[in-house]
Length: 144
Image (cartoon, rainbow, N blue to C red; front, side, top):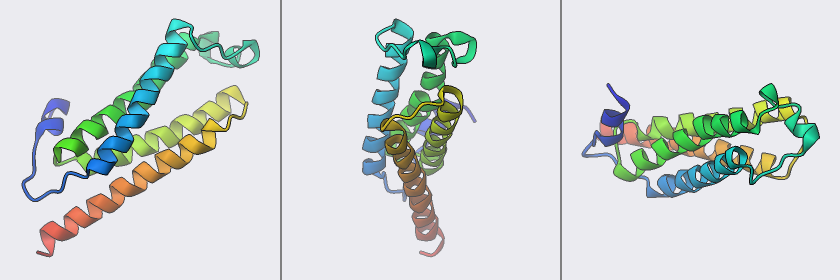
């Protein structure tokens, strides 16, 4: 099954979870903005942090942010808005990817920002909400 099929496959009895779609969409926009800022040079991390990045490259950091945060959050947002079959799983993956991003970011840059616990809580909330929606949908389909 291709990603496009996953994003467009509708399940009739499934609710669409528009709240998850909006929340993941907002984080996707933030991820794209951060990636663009890193790749385009609009965000300067400073020499100490830049020196800790792989190959000392904010461009690679931006590409990683795009790949690990923005794209999964976009996929989850589209899928949950449309009410596709794998929407909840995509939300879980996107939330866990954001948590992983924060953990790896802390390991690499070894510097603290107030955004890190906020984003970690955000990722956790997305993953838990996706998991709860998945359980509710499963119960509605199998216990009805």
